[in-house]
Structure formats: C-alpha cells, structure tokens
Amino acid sequence: MNITQVALGRHLPPTAPPSGQWTPLPGNGSGMKYSLDFSTLLPYWPAFLNGAWLTLKMTAVAVVVGMGSGTLLAFAKRSKIKPLASVCAAYIEVVRNTPFLVQIFLLYFGLSSVVRTWCHSRAPTNTATLLW
Image (cartoon, helix red, strand yellow):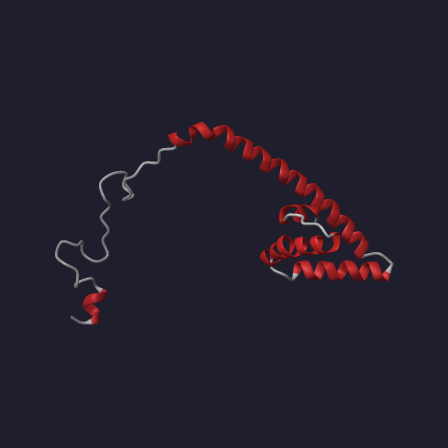
C-alpha cells in the first residue's frame, strides 16, 4: 500500500463508504441522533431569572461607574497640573498594557494582602477586592 492509496481512502475496509462521500446516520439528516431534555432544570427557572436580573443590574452599575471614572480620568490626564497628568497617564498605560487576567489576579490576591498589611485586619479576599 502506498501513500496514494491511503490518500484516496483505498486502505479502508470494504464496508466503509468510498473516499469523498459522507453518509449521515438515519435521523434528522445531520448525523446526530440525540435530544436535549431541559425538563430537569424547570424547577430552577426562578433562580436563573434572578441570576439574569442580577447580571443586568451589575452590568448597568459597571457601565455607569466605568464611564464616570473613565471620563474623570481622561479630564485629569488632560489637566494642566503636570503631576496629576503624569499619574493618570502612567495608570492608563499600566492598565492598557497588562493582560486582563493578570489584573484580576493582582486585584484578587495582591489587594487583599495590602489591606491586611495596612489595616492590620484579616479581611477576606472578596472584601478586599470589593474595596477596590
């Protein structure tokens, strides 16, 4: 058997369809014969709706806070006060040039360490992150 026979599918057993042809399984024509049953999730529907509503509320708050803080930061960067403009420019460069996952790790683990050190408290990591 040479490479040409393998490429043309001639190495397959005789029961296989010829190379270049596809025969779907009987059913809906796509070859997949399964059905999805979501009836077991029906009792949890109110929890899903509450989660969706909470997600929308958190999104709205994040958009408002983000737009507000971003606008203030942009005005501060364009300020005539050089130290303020420099600090804002440095903050913008750091945030723009670090991957988001690294920022999340720094906030989650690093900020809690800073809060514990400076405030001499045993604040949980989630509380320290919320303070940010």
